[in-house]
Length: 178
Image (spheres, rainbow, N blue to C red):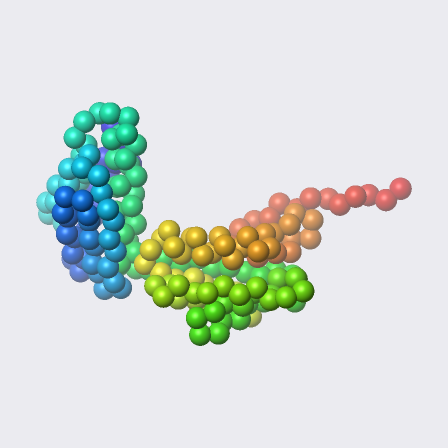
């Protein structure tokens, strides 16, 4: 049995969980999330706990078991407390600007790069070189952070670039002169 799939999911008091044949709907204080399902799993709710079991032992069902459990757990966590990713701009002239629903990134190019901020996410500017991306959907938060970071990933020689908060850049020695 899947190690992840057999874990229980604790459902907080302020979260409502609705399971139909092909969908799961999770509602909480920050919003609601919906996920479509295949009919390969059974959901058992008892005493504010959700236990997911599989119908058969085929390979596709085993793969799907841990995936759905992880997705449902992230949905429950997202509607109770938001997910966040923090990005830091490291380098001379590297900075972020938030204008209504557009994030402007200056990362050493000749032009600033603009990112539209999705409706269900919020971007907080803590300082000119530090932003936090908040949202209830873990996938969307991580995807936007990865897209922003890809404009100028950190390089190992000077450590310049856009990096996640807490990310450690292993520095390399440069060329030595003769």
